[in-house]
Amino acid sequence: MGSYRLGKELEVKGVEDQLVREILGDLYEEGEEPVARRALAGKLSVLGRLPASARSSRVGRFLHRRGFSSELIWRLLHEEQQG
Image (cartoon, rainbow, N blue to C red; front, side, top):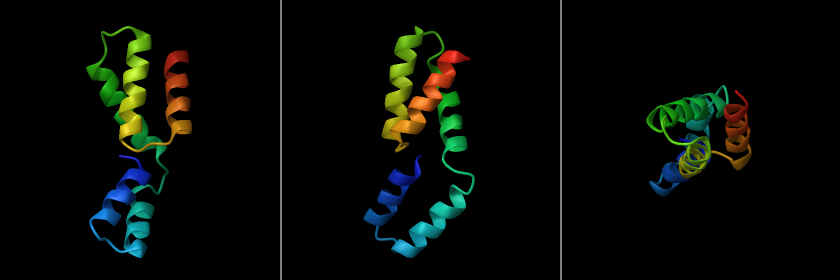
């Protein structure tokens, strides 16, 4: 899950802002990219037989729903198509 979505969910549950920042800092110490890459790999393994265009759009929507930034999603999908 992306830091934005996780932060919002914690705020909705009433977690104090300072604690939310600490939690996000600890969880995403290396940034969101490693978390997004793991989510991407997992989703691609499930969608392996679909045509590339269908896979990309589904994975993009999946990552977006998980709260990752559009920029990160675009970059990961672009790398996936190149690789």
